[in-house]
Image (cartoon, rainbow, N blue to C red; front, side, top):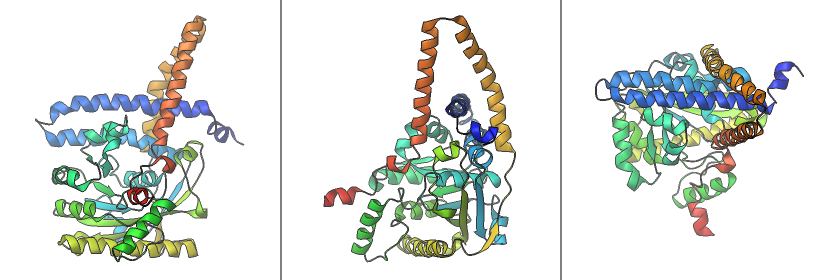
Length: 376
């Protein structure tokens, strides 16, 4: 085992990476708070600044995927679709099967220059998660309770406010509403059968309200919908902890571009279009399981150095005073000071682990299980 491979497995290294991410995130959130004074004066300047501040935080996670674990991402699509990336506003539909599916999506956003301006329809609970939710708040992310009667006005208002966004944005939708599990899939297919909808083998039944509302509100701004079907070679099920330990994965992403004018204006017809899309996604997963590849030409967009340079800059800025402080603590010889410091380290370790836990499937929401509970 080489030195770098050894370091990737060490807890103290993980703690230092977490320290850089958390402290830099708090600094970024503080700066974002200060930028609020720009909102009534120059909203577009506020947005551009926050895009770059968000990039400085999110790119640290992308760095872990690209440079720390050296995970490879391959696109299966056509040249015309690749040529459109980063040059238009788009809605992204991604399957929700893996703990790091969002990170693979962010990697593609970074490589095509839209990471800082990427958007998502997020569950409201995430608003209260330090760093992640706070950064999203300043980015005008649309939060919802996933109860349409309560969410309708909030979602429509949030989406329409993005109509004049100054940077190209990719708006990510997990139409299944929650991560795939066998229990949720069983319940979902029971619902599909009761509604006379085709059974899906690899996906949950898509929830159409968010999609139809997004395309209606963003029509005239968004020019295309990108359907992305993600899988990992070797039937791997990667995790953020695995990435932190330097495990290398190979992600394959089948991308199809649909011009927005191809999606019906009528809400019911748009919902039917989405159901048909998920039948096609299911067929693509079946092809992948049989052949080990998706159909289409393969592209491997080159990783850019900015994520690594950004992390190294933050590490240099934050770790130097940290090391000086630690040396001073132990040089003092004070048991109380040393124990206090070790307690702080333990608390920091717990906090970082809780942040990672947000991505874990088994700690995901119970959304999608309501029908199951009723049957019980």
